[in-house]
Image (cartoon, rainbow, N blue to C red; front, side, top):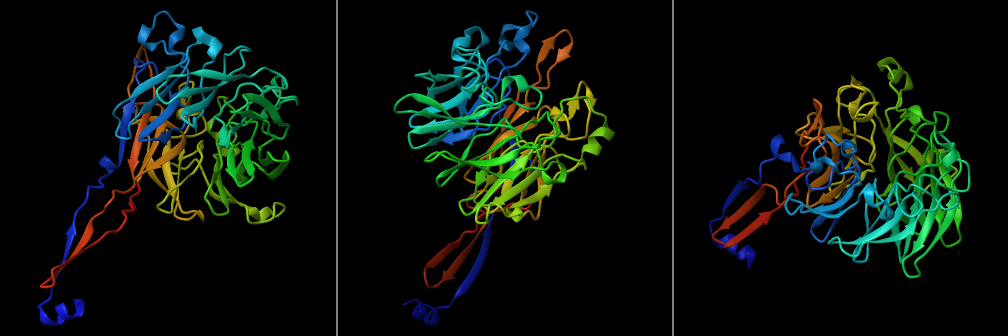
Length: 474
C-alpha cells in the first residue's frame, strides 16, 4: 500500500525543524526557592529526595537565634523538614525542630529516606540522652515519633545521615559512640557504629563497631545485592584517609575493600556511594579538611582538593585496579574543588556532581578568601572523560556552597546550597550570606526540536524525536 502511494503520487518531502524551549544559559539554572528564616527553615545541608511529585529535604540549625538582638523570625535554631514542588511552588515546612524542645532531637544533617508512607531521618543532637535520635514523620508532617534515642558508648551517637531501607529493616551509621576508641579530633567520643532498626519489631541493635583507620561515616549506606556499601573517614586526622567497606547483614560479614591513600589518590569521603546498576560504584572524596586558617601556600602544598572515583565490583577485591580515580580536582580556577556530594548517574549517560568550593567552607575562612570559587556543578562520562563545569555558584543571589547529592527528574537536576539566595540583616552591622536555596538545572527538555517529515500525496506524517542533550559548558 505504502509503495503504491509512492509510485502513483507526487512525493513532496519537507523537513521542518520545530524549535523547542530555549536552552539559553539564563534559563538552564534557576533558584526555585530561597530560604529566609521567616518560614522556620534555613541552611539546607542535605540532599533532597523526590516522592509523588514532591521534593523533600531538611535544613540544619542556624546560629541566628543565639542573640536577643536578632528579630524573632531569625531564631531558627533546630532545623526542619520541608517539601516543595519541582517548579518551586507549594513550599511547606512540615516539621520543625528546636533546641528548646530537645527531647525529640534536633539538627538534621544529611538526608531523608522513604519507608512506607513515612519519611525517616536522623538528628545529630538532643533526644533522651542528648546524643541524637532516629525518627520518622508522615509526608504531611503528621505522626512524628522518635524510633530510637542514641545512648552513648557502645550504642552509637550523633548520626549524620539517614538510614537505608532493606525490606522491613533500617540500616544506618553513626559518627561516634561505638565501643572502640575514636580517631581524629574527638577520640574520646569513640568510633562510629553500623546499626539496624527493625520497623516490625521496633528493635535496635549495633551490627558493627568501626575502628581506625577511619571511624566516622558522613554518608548513607548503599545496597547492592546482599551487601551494604559505605565509607568512613577521620577528616581531622592527616594520617588516616578513610576506607570503603561492605557489610552483609545475613551473616554479619564485614570487609574493607579499599583504603584511601590521600592526595591524588583520594581521601576523606564525605557522602555516599552510588551504584550504576551494572558493576560500578561511584563516589567522591572531599580531601583533607583541617578547619584551620591555612595560607594559600599551605593549601597548595597539601594537593588534596578531592577526587571522583569508581570501584569495579566485577573485579577481585584484592586487585588494586578495581579502584580508579576518574578526576582529580585542583586549585585551578574553573575546575572546582572539594566535591562533597555523591554522584548522580543520570539517564542521559553522564555522571553529575557538585563541589562546594576551595579549601575552606564556602571559599573563605575568618574573612580570608581561599581560591575564587564558591561551588560548581559538573559532569563527566562514566570513564572519566570529558569533564566539564556546567555552572559556577558565584553570588549570594544565585546561591553559594552547593551541598550533597543531586536528584534527576524529567531532564532536570535539583540540588541545594547552604548559603545564598536572600541576604539577611543580622543586626550590629552584620549581614549574612543568605540562608540557602533549592535550585534546578535543566539538562534537556522533552521533546527537543524535532524533525517533521511530510509525505504529500500519501497522507502520511511522521515525527522524529531526539532526546535533548545540552553540550553547553559555563
